[in-house]
Length: 286
Image (cartoon, rainbow, N blue to C red):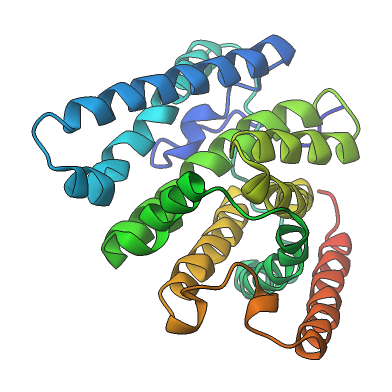
């Protein structure tokens, strides 16, 4: 059963439409994961090469701008090739669709931004329950969010990460799953994949919860623009908070807020997320 509207229309002006003719099967999804690993290894090699003519401080500050896209290039090249090969004979299933119902894009966009920040606040409870983050991982996270120039952090974490990760996790993996399993499993499995690629539980657990929310939005609207916006909102919020003096030594919101303040914030956040889920549940399938 298809959960996307097939079309023969080719939108040459759209970067994302270049993948419309490739919906990966099980073997294709596994291959995309392997290509992501290969890209990560290639990115690591490039990072080492950068160290031969850049200082460590420069590599830490700017290296991610170069190596992060490299991680996804093998998978994107393969998917683009398969899509071009299939375009002559197969129907296209849009990677990025616009099923917004009567509400329209902009009200939904505002709603998902607020709901994503609310959901991120709630997932902080899982981080609080985990043991302290290892120093090496804490240093790595700080290099990504607070030690680099702000424009570098925002470009890499708030622009590149949402684009590439949503392309892979929702656009390819979840879109493929929606053609093969029930929607709930497509949402959960793609969120699990999204969590695993973060490679540590301090990011993976919140990523899984947020990935389920992103998946719900993608299932109801087919819009990768909305999930990229949600991903951007979460990452930008994290980057900006990491720059505030009040959060310099804080591990979680419970280090900043009193238990009563956090409880109130949790209840309000849960209400916002529940409201967003309800609004999207009312969007009809076209």
